[in-house]
Image 1 (cartoon, helix red, strand yellow):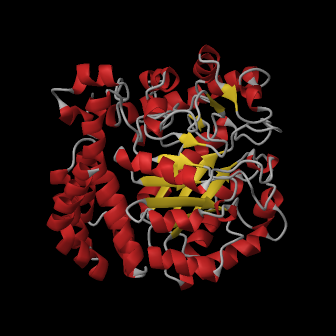
Image 2 (tube, rainbow, N blue to C red):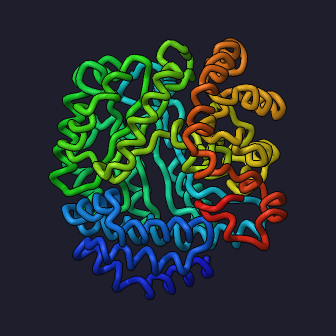
Length: 481
């Protein structure tokens, strides 16, 4: 799109010298200057986000200091692409484009796209839905190119590639090479990382790997298979050799809770140059869906304090606990509020765990799907609760989840997916009720309701215009709606 290209060129001209200095020196003060410059060109809520980053850099915030040190030891091309693709294209330029197109199409647009191009995987992990099909389902090269192009045309340049195992997908590097202006976070089991593909990633610079790990050898090999832990350590060595930035994806279960709570585990990740960590709550989905591995409400409550301590410590570039950090994202991210999931069958799901869909990319465009009654109903409802420690429709607000699926006759995407709305419903309701007690304690007694008030109507166009059209600053991440 000519408008997007013009905006990119203008912003890159204004920030090119600063970007060059950041890539060359990785100086914290240069980072602050970059964020201040971009904040003046962006729109809310990206504007206030960039402003907070600038202030953090100026004040030598531990997390921003970590970024500076990380950039210094990384491949320059990797740093350049984080700045140009992720920070400038996605957050600064993309937010402006998305908001302009929001008015044109009268629908709120997400910030990123999640794509599972294949369900094929070389492992058979306990509790995973993706290993049911072999190579039966896969997006063609033309399909994935078309989908990413559609997202780019909507001002979206950040993609999460999951699966299945992305390194099994034959067109993974074709995607990275073709979409040089986009940035890709790739969730992988790490067993297929080689010198060859690490070298390619270093040359391209526009991707980062989040490698799944459950703890130390016992927990990781129990869930993922014997020998996987050692293969992960080998992958880390290769990625470090090529000066790539990489992270960890940790699934919190009832079984590995004590490991996640230990300083020893987090020190181990740091010692192996893991730069960031995503923490996922185990979800009872898939053919063998079970509540047995779902963390107890008490475990989830304890984990919050650990991951929040780590988030603020500066020991990592960031630590994000999706189910416990809803106060940072205004609740659930799914259904086009901030992202959506294109699966290997071409169906578009609210998220990777809400495994139901109404529309398929082979029949409708991404924009048409975002404007569909199914997704718009979700966007009108998010956040599902004013308490942002209860962000999830599946385990925190299961009655909302069941109502959405039933009202729009959404199609189960895997054998057993429907168990979350029928067979497991009583247990999910009980889990939600028990978690509410802990969530209310955090939200009301510890002051989060005052510091991070929920914003209603942000993701529905009509409501957003009625509430915020003449008062954009209220969309700032640190403002009460």
